[in-house]
Image (cartoon, rainbow, N blue to C red; front, side, top):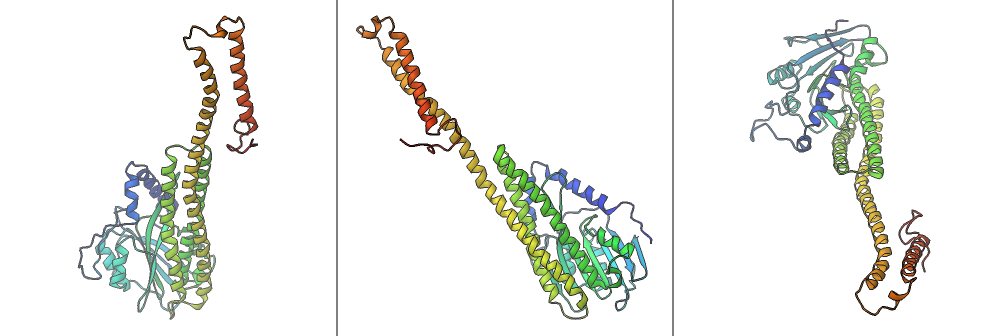
Length: 400
């Protein structure tokens, strides 16, 4: 095996995620994240169909080309510096050639790749135009698939969204990624070791394996978002701050980004199952149906998390209102106790010349004792009604 890659895919993916984390902490991140939902089109209105224009950010300095060739008895992996003039594509189902392109900013290279493998002009236009909805397109001699590969930024619930385009042809498969690092390393490991069915099947089974890896990683992303939801729920209940509401809205936005990838992914797989012809082996259909079933689990999980996140806002407002009510209850009780005491003190503070109690030696301590008794009596009534001391709701005690 000839592998020219100097770093593991996991390390590269980690570096990319860390870079996204640094960007996510920028003060204007909240103003920039909506670009995932509403993207500016770089193409001029009226441009001819099939015109290749890169619409996304440049995420790599240099486009990398990785070539994997395998069959049931052999495997070869290498990184090529330049695109060859021609590719020796396997015939029938004796082997598969997998070309992986990392980086979409080099439009000329994308067009040469499309010409090399016979990719339809409209398909290569979608490759360069990032932000596409996940979909499946059928052409005469190949299938074109667009999916979104998701990942979580380390230490935060922010979702990294990368478009991955897949061309499936007879005996070959081409993938286009925006940057290095992906979720396909387990598939490559199975190819290297010869484990499983992938080495003995065609390009359609390799496409299934890649889609299955994408779906499995969706579960990991949702697991991380579920933990973020749990932590945020505890914060809302125990220690809400002025920053809590912002976190709730950010979490809802990330869940919306996941939903925009998962729902069309189910439609994509449904269309894949309806494909007829030599591009899809009948032996691959049961595996695609399994991924299709996983999509229902993903959709259910996404909707549950979105419902919980939506409820966190109401829970936050309710909790803040309850805390305000508790403070107001304490202040009201204190004011209720001191109102009669203030009344008595106000009477004896008037400068009348004839007040009978002024000449009585025990009048002063008697008035103080009466005021103390009134305060204690009111406290006893409040406690009996459950307004203080029992932790019960206001008015929840015995009514007189």
